[in-house]
Length: 132
Image 1 (cartoon, rainbow, N blue to C red):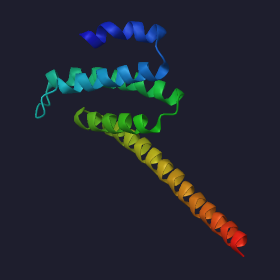
Image 2 (image 1 turned 180 degrees about the horizontal axis):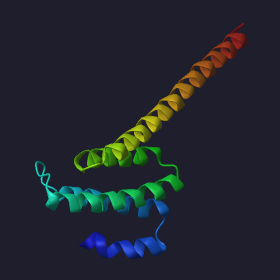
Image 3 (image 1 turned 90 degrees about the horizontal axis):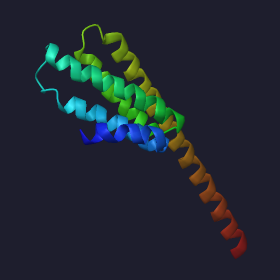
């Protein structure tokens, strides 16, 4: 209830990251309302509400390129679609987005490691040149 009351103010005056974080938190609250073993109609509504909030959060996190949070959103979406009837196609799409971001993040890290090793070689060569 407190988060629901604060969201309109955040959406009007808050930074994009805070807006997105509020939507993500609200989605997680909706998911917490779903009993873990329940799959009936009563479990469907909180999941649908969570998906709406996750879509809002994804749109906002995309504006600021927060890859870590986008991965979390895609993961949650794929988990939710797993339990919804006829959600298999959307589940696969969310999972594909998750793996695409994960691969992109690994590629960035690999590039950084390569630069550090090149940078280390250059520094080593400079030090050897100064010694000699």
